[in-house]
Image: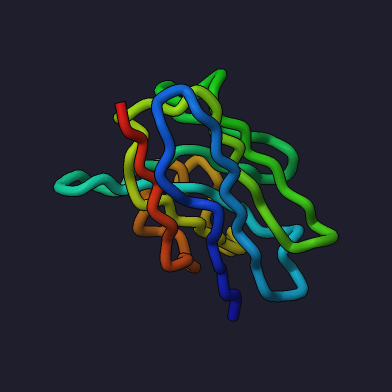
Length: 127
């Protein structure tokens, strides 16, 4: 069982930065695919960024502004968010998956396929 706890959300102005953290329990954290998703009111959950075996993927709307990183020694993944815009407002969730029987490309396409989820942290960007 893996538990994920997000932190770092808040209320900021357009153009500001935030760094989200996701602390994971479990001894095999380093082998898991990790991801950040976000869900705005009335919208479906959207993949923001994900990392697996050293490869990182970003949705087009955050490329060049957001950076995902992981520290396996601390069992933590981060999402550095720069140049935040009002459209980035959402609840941000961390997700993890051991990729047993499912590939990373399929995980990127199917949010519901991810095994473990955190409770989320609110990010609000005012204009």
